[in-house]
Length: 314
Image (cartoon, rainbow, N blue to C red):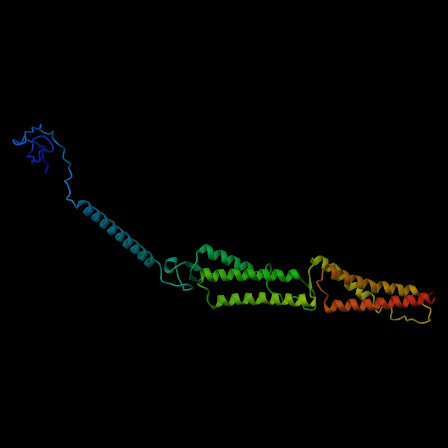
């Protein structure tokens, strides 16, 4: 309620045709104060709220927000349940006819035409299948077995390293597919990984064995082929060396002894060169080749020196 300056209540009267109300403060006979009538005051269209109205509005707004958040959460739960319910119930490796039947992933068509559920996308399994065919099934271009070379023969180090590398790739892609698409894989899938790991281990074992016994060459195939061929022909050519001569007083054609000496020496030099260029160590076979030729060479030199010094040469 408005009051006049002298503290009295102002009577209120409404004026027709004017929005709001006007307060006419008449002079108080006892106060001696005369005030002019106040101009009409514009009243807000919103009614004045009680003293605690602000708090009431805040509670109302907070309650509205709370109910909105709860409603949104319930909506999201409903959507999630709907989406989950829309998926199928079939698990990995179970037969299916379409993607909708699988609880996750998609319905995959195998090479035999059968369809089963897999956990991964079609792009993922197509890529892993492609790599599996390449590294695990294409033995012609990506061999993994290391049992084709007899242990009596020297083998290229690269032969074993390439097969070990192919084995690594095959194992990696099979494990990736089992993990990503087959929920770890069934027993058949695990057996395939085990087979690849056994093959790789055989290659490691064979390589280590050959490194220890001299059955490995590290040069190029062409270099090895050339030098090993030279050793074979040279070490076969010296025959019995100088066994037909001895240190006696018999006069002989010393040129024959010289030729035999050269032949034994050729075998010694050929083995030494092969050893230097290609072999980390000599095998027992190469050591025997070298020792026999060196012993024959030393004997030839000794007999030739004796004949020359005693003038038993023709």
